[in-house]
Image 1 (cartoon, rainbow, N blue to C red):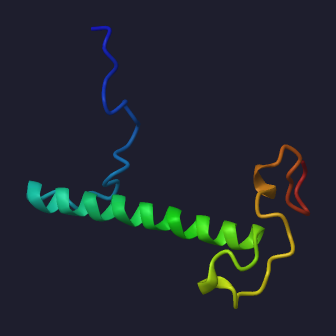
Image 2 (cartoon, rainbow, N blue to C red; image 1 turned 45 degrees about the vertical axis):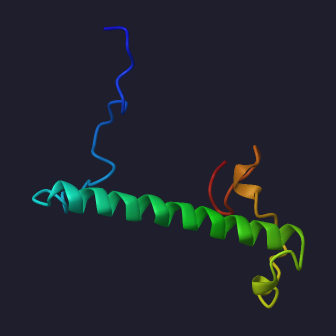
Image 3 (cartoon, rainbow, N blue to C red; image 1 turned 120 degrees about the vertical axis):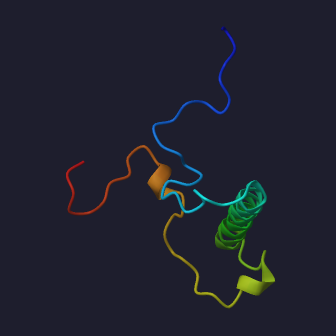
Length: 88
């Protein structure tokens, strides 16, 4: 068939790689997956809050008492990023 498989085939089960939900009911699996997705969403909101506070001091009042990071938070994504002591 010409249709793309969904989800795409991956070498391991990324949802439950350690088989923690192997004998669980479908309801418990669905509840665990929902919790995992919501946790990921909350983590993304949190990291965006830290990035916003780093770029615009005072943008997130709850983070205003945290020490300012003097470096570039996006440096790992730069084309010339390298770790000191490692060959580039």
